Image: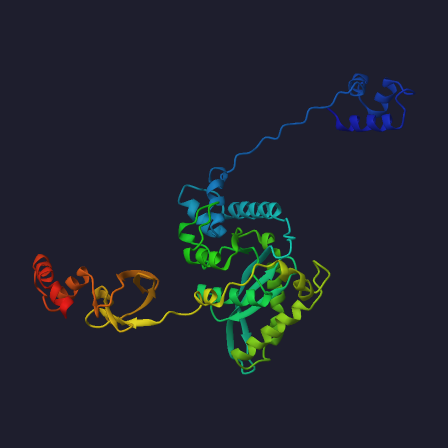
Length: 403
């Protein structure tokens, strides 16, 4: 049916000409049959044509593509992956789908975090920022960023790495700068926060040590998806502000001097009028600080930033701790371990792994039977069978105690 006829009839009706003009006259003007005019005047509407959905070579791979996007894969990596699974289409088809999907997801996540005082902060890094000294020396550094949601107050720190220990140190300093801890903090998919190996789509698993840190400090960690920048827009806009540091290229001599520049920059941006609040962040911080959680004691903060004392394992496969000796497995001979002490036990760690523990006692020598067996097998009783060594140890354990 003709849409132009329906449009013209609607114009006649709005002008009040229905009663003064016959159907035949209207039909002559529109160049159609009077019966057509009659049907439209009686409320007939043409049926809309159904869109015929064309099948795409991509259809059966769309779910796979989305799942790979969720874990941060690139369009090219996904294209190569689905090719092995039978995809015969072009790369551009994959790239277009990826782009449209990202845009749709971003639209769904455009709700801006306008948070109550003390409720939320957001964290991110400006990675691999290249700065050049007066002498032409290249400094490749990172900028840690934390911004409070209500006041827009920013904490900015120069770092030489992005390790978990550095993350904890930066966050501790940010809490001190703000005068307290926000109730929740938003992070992206950074390796120091998320256990990527054990995370699945829609089920992000946080790093065990980071979870413990968040509990000890008192905030609730929230992760946002990789390609949803609007969910942490304040910190993304702050990353753009950090680009202003480029003006200091060829204006500093040492790393320490660059640190001072970053501190000065932080003070500067916290005293500028925020477009989001039309106030200076540092002024709104006065109100927000009252709603922040109190800072934990210094001992809790230090536990995540200071390195434990290390003890070297002797040739006898033992360490000396507070004047007493404790056995460890022989593969640690010559290596360094750390010790954590509780009310009842001495826990011995190699790197971050718990190797063994000993019940506290007043004995000079503290050992486990399996460690003694390993020691004798590798040295004094080398060549003896396991059962012979074990029998020897069982017969002489009392001698070790007397010794």
